[in-house]
Amino acid sequence: MTESAYQGDGEEYLPTGDDHVAERFAEISDEDAEARVASLRAGLGDYDLDEEDAALLAAEGDDFFDDEDGDVPPVVAIIGRPNVGKSTLVNRIIGRREAVVEDVPGVTRDRVAYQAEWMGRDFTLVDTGGWEHDAKGIHARVAEQAEIAADIADAVIFVVDAMVGATATDEAVVKMLRRIKKPVYLVANKIDDFNQEAESHALWSLGFGQPYPVSALHGRGTADLLDDLMKKLPEHSAFGGLVPRGGPRRVALIGRPNVGKSSLLNKLAGSERVVVDDFAGTTRDPVDELVELGGRTWRFVDTAGIRRRQHMAHGSDYYASLRTQSALDKAEVAVVLLAVDEVLSEQDVRILQMTIDSGRALVLAFNKWDMLDDERRYYLEREIDRDLAHVEWAPRVNMSAKTGWHKDKLVPALDTALESWDTRIPTGKLNAFLGELVAAHPHPVRGGKQPRILFATQASARPPRFVLFTTGFLDPGYRRFITRRLRETFGFPGTPIEIAMRVREKRSRKK
Image (cartoon, rainbow, N blue to C red; front, side, top):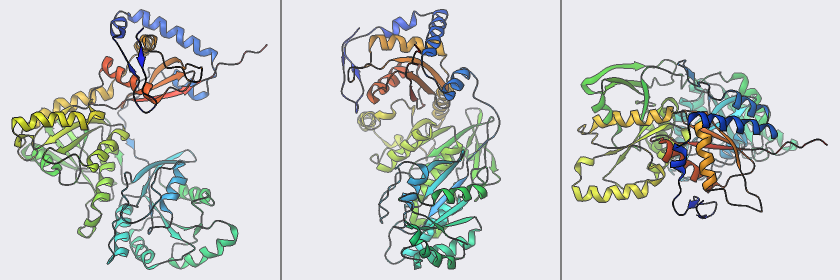
């Protein structure tokens, strides 16, 4: 056993010295691995497991993939002027504090879409906090951002500050909402008690029926709102439509504005373009491109995105985030385009994180590489290694979107990422590997206790998701150590890996 140095919860657990985990794991036969896993499974019988645990273990090894079309959950847009409590309501509905609650002009939003659930139904919330301040046209700016969000939504929650009443900005949003012909739920926010409910009555004049008196801060009235929302919300989004399974693999070509996405798509499609496929059921008819690459057809999803009107150009960052999220929702693998003649921007990092959070396979494409001389390429390689260390597992392609230089290298990178994304590790091999790893590098003792891994299984692929049954909470740094060693042993280039824990206590023995 080697000695280990631990840097704390914020950093990865770092063992010192050499170990022989790889050699020992290689010596374990399939028969021995299966025998070990049978013993570990039997040992779980001593612990309290719930119905979800039992279902997971019963489904172990099942094929989770099918060729049926998948449905996108319905989309709900939350709109309203600044300071009415939109983000507070988002946090209340999703049950956690994720949305930025300082609704002031210029606040940067890392995310605009949030996954939510009510009464067993999944849906997506789109927050419209990313509008831009313009003292001369503030009402129009808010209405424009609301219109962008409403374009992709199946229903709208319109939030008004009941204690202030309808303002000129609210009226501008109302005019837009009357045109879109979608269900609108008017929320009279900041009604903290019954005595204030009379303040909401004045909002009847907006023409959206009875307002919902709500306190987003305290949760008052939100259950009634969501109950009624579920009654009119469709089972599946008209905006996302069906996510096609089977057939050509689905690729999202994403990146910040003006990084070269259109140039690359045009070069890829060009004379090799086989067909333009208009998807039914989408609000603005996003177009999927079927492109011939490497002798095979690939589907570049939602490459046209939402066809933004010219007057909406002001909300470019917000619009780009919506388009990126939409493409990721329908894709299997994302090609993130980065420009090598500019420094890595905050928006680049956000887009990379959106891709990882979405669980899609990932390929990094560095545009304009052909314009660099050898010396600059040498130093840039090292800058990339440093700045993108958190996605060092993603295949890289150095190319030119304008000329198509090295575009043929995209296909091997896509194949590598998708193969990893689809990978399933047999339960016997997974537990044999973890057994050797933990034997060599046990979890540090915390408060006199040392958590142990009782059993591991891969709950699903696309991306690979692993569940560890443990006797205690594993430090984040130790989980990152396990992830790194999983990659070293099994590969997984081009796909994020998710590791979840289920801490279980030993079943009490009756005397």
